[in-house]
Length: 117
Ligand code: 5GP
Image (cartoon, rainbow, N blue to C red; front, side, top):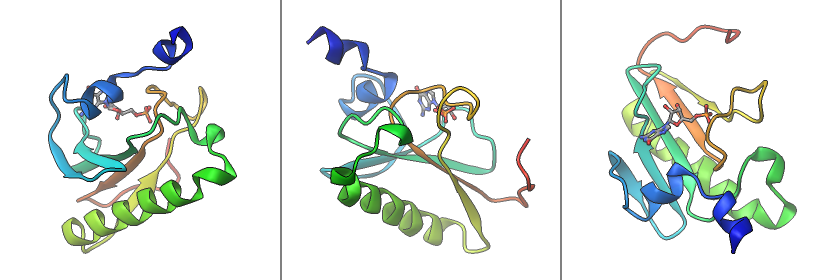
């Protein structure tokens, strides 16, 4: 139980509605909500409801949820961002991951730069 507690993040509180978020999609497996500190005119996150800390933690048995997350990101992005968009998964320290609950960033609504800083 204590180990479970250690892995709890703010996103668990968003999933359980203990803290509010601007939720744009929800089903039994995943949740999508607008990023509180947007880096583009459209910036939302798609997360699994199950606790997966980071991309490095993903196992072969997580194939279905990973496919769900990417497809959900595509569906939500396609209807909001017809001119293009970007998916990002930050992993670990040098990847600038700050919340250790797996999430896909979806960014768009302006011309994005490449490569990222
Ligand atoms: P990371 O740096 O881990 O890839 O991204 C975490 C993202 O979560 C950041 O873009 C940050 O703005 C967002 N974020 C952190 N806390 C909250 C929160 O309480 N609510 C919402 N909506 N977004 C959050």
